[in-house]
Image 1 (cartoon, rainbow, N blue to C red):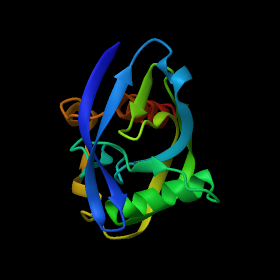
Image 2: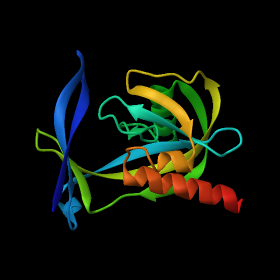
Image 3: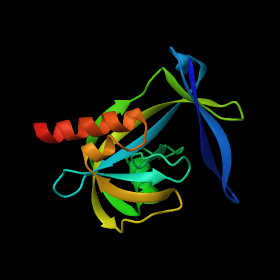
Length: 171
């Protein structure tokens, strides 16, 4: 069992408040957690050589625009909302790249909640808006696969980006 402690910020009515969340890795640790559905967007540049990544303000990591699905929302709506909230861009979802989850990783919050995420990752393209830093990000930009390998992020982000580029090459 490996523990990785990271500072996470959770939105509250008075703004973002720091909380400590633990990423916990362990053999089938997910059986002790609640399943949550989240969605993410792989947004490629026009030549389809770079992917848009925001640096999250809550933990400083580079991740795809992503977040948890709200009640009453479908997966595409979640992907559109999260893309706008984190990048300032309006996107159109083209297709599902894949579904990513690991029974060996959970997030534990100070209130005792433990979540194992099931993430639907879509390829999306920009249809409007203006690329910008938002209250959920500190930086945004397009990066090549080689650049991304040197950036601090989560493994599922790297795996899904590699899958998106593989699908582009096969098309």
